[in-house]
Image (tube, rainbow, N blue to C red; front, side, top):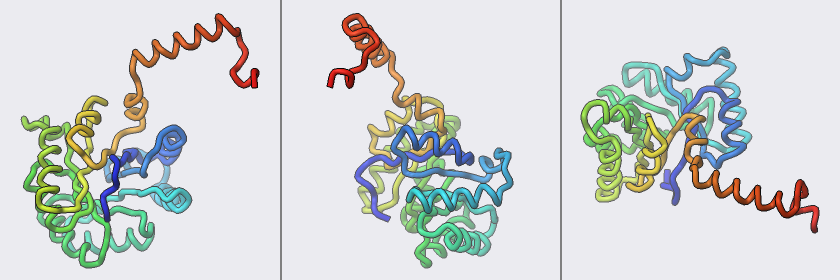
Length: 232
């Protein structure tokens, strides 16, 4: 998978209606799920997976789905089954456990698109990239929680991948504030996955609101309730 020339944005949610709502307002590249997220849906899992497939077939978006097996051979089997079900628009998520890295090597021999997830260190990310992972997903706030610098760690991953010529994309995950997304863009992070609520926060700014209110008041004072198109 080639890197895009822009930061990719994914919606981190299992509810397909919320994904559609975000997509109606913002340019997204797809959506991500994990086993924990999937447990929070009120719908039967079979129904969710079917709706995911229909949606990505319709839109061309990408969906990330994580394996639930714990040994490499079963992870590999699940990855192939997910590819067979969803087609080319699925990215299979593997855990950065020892078995997960073995599964990564098996999956890449089959040409599967893989994201190594729950990354908390540079070395985990480097091994994912060397193994051919298409995405490496560091958990930014979790890295902060263990006393390291999550944003700084992502920046070092980006620089290391570029230095060694790896095509792996760094997919930032797990955030507390919108400011973290801005800072990730500054260090060259290739992609982020965020909750639906975060998209509204990305465009929120008090100065924008003040300017819009000034435009609104100026127009109404001069032209009342008419609209610009009334004068065409």
